[in-house]
Length: 81
Length: 204
Image (cartoon, rainbow over all chains, first blue to last red; front, side):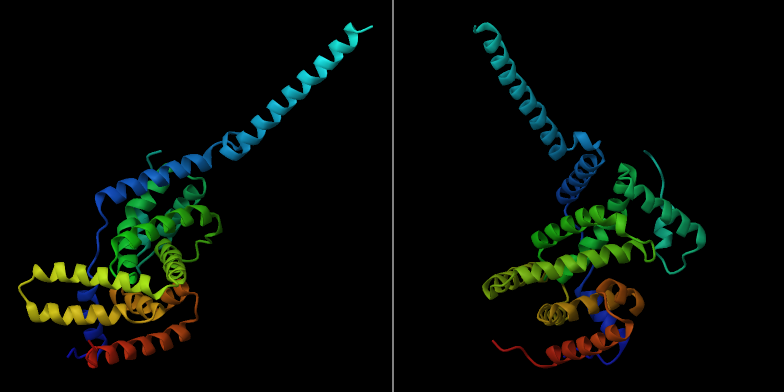
C-alpha cells in the first residue's frame, strides 16, 4: 500500500499520477482560430456586429417598404380625380 | 500587433517585481482592448497548463478537457474587463477553469454518464500501463489514479492545486473562492480521504 505519511510523499504520488498532459496540436490550432475569430467579432465597430448590423438592415428595409407604400398611395391619390 | 509580453511569465512566478507587474498590467490592458497579439500570448502561455490542470480534474478525459479549456478561454476573454489585476493571470484562469469543471459535473446528473467516463479512464490507464516496464509502480499509480478520481471534485481540485501545481494556500483560496483557513481544512479532509481510499482495497 502507498505510504502517505508526509507532504513529500503526497506530492510525489500526485505528481506521478498527474503528469503534465499535452493537448493535441489539432485542438490547439482550432482553439487559437476560435479565439482569434471571437476577438475579431468582438472588436468590430458596433454597427458591424451581427446583431446590430441585422437590426439596422431590418430598419432600413422597413423604412424603404413603408416609403414605397406611402409613395404608391400618394401617386394613386394624385392620379385619381 | 507584434508586442512581447515575455516578462509576464516571470510575473507568474513567486518572485514577481514591480517591472513585471507593470508589464502584466499592460498585457491585461491589451487583452481588454482585444488586441490579437495579447490574445495569442494568453493562449501560448497558458493553454497547455490549463489543459493539463483540467485534464486531471475530469478523470483524464481528453474530449471533456478540450471542451472545458475552450469554455475557459472564451469566458476569460468575455470577463477580462472584470479582472482587477490583483491576482496572477494564471490564478484568474485557474479560477475560471475550476468553475467550468464544477459546471460540467453539475450537468452530469445521471450516474450512468459518470460511470461511462470512469470506464473511458480505465481504458486509457490500461493503454498507458502497457507501455511501462515498472509494473509495480504502475499498479500503484493506477490505484492512486482511481482513488483520486473517486474523490469528490473539490477534494480532487484542492489536492491537484496544492501538490501538482504546487500553489500556496492563499493562491488556492483565490481560485476556489474560499478563505485560506477553509482551504487548510479542505486539504486536511482531502488528504485523509485519499489515504483512506488507498489503504482500503476497492471492492470488485
